[in-house]
Length: 192
Image (tube, rainbow, N blue to C red; front, side, top):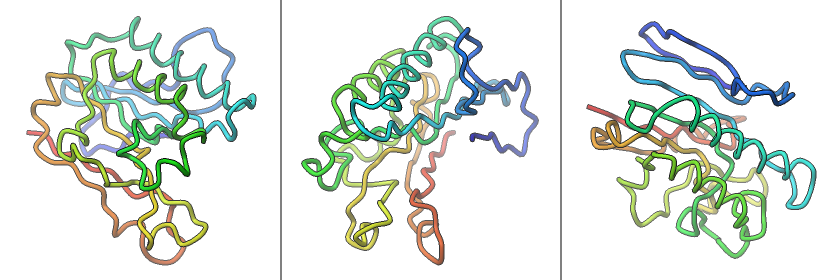
């Protein structure tokens, strides 16, 4: 599931995409806080390219793009963040060849993510790390975390009005250490 945590009151909080799709999965929440429309998404993983779950992933991303087009404007202050389950390009994978045909790096998934970004978002993490090599997810198997064999699949996208105010972005790798950690580490962006 997804959540919005804020010290300030959130208004107009809604789950889902407000469309006619019969989708019981809680993968998107949105709300307004101090003039910013926040959207937190947990994009489907897709399991395996060509599977029904992969088709659901691509359809879900297309639905999100349609929701953006009908529901908000790129001229507004909008942030879309969360686990997108897609590494945008090879700079976002420690071992691109290993992941190229996976649901996390497949060209169709990347194209779907690019359509969402092109709606009017900027990747604020990329702004601060243009050369890549910083990851937010590591497979539990094969000691991927200590070996640095990760992917950047957790993102913070912001409309232009906010992206220009992003002063820093980082991955909190310390949260990935310790006993029974998540396979993800938090991605953090700071805005003026």
